[in-house]
Image (tube, rainbow, N blue to C red; front, side, top):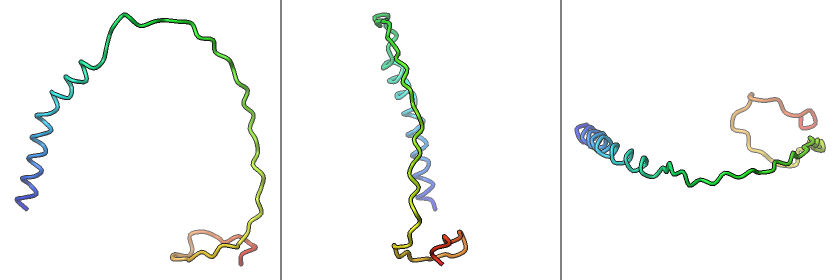
Length: 79
């Protein structure tokens, strides 16, 4: 029990010690430079039409091992 508590306390202490370092590094990594280039981009609309998938007939060719029964109804052709 003590070993688990010691490991947990060590992780918390390491996290508290590392947080300022990580936050400082991420603050330095972001750039607020005014060197960004602004250009106009042409946006072309694309028409998207839904396509219905072909209905496949239900087949019962695969053998399935049933562990728990009663969660769903079997297809009518499989009974």
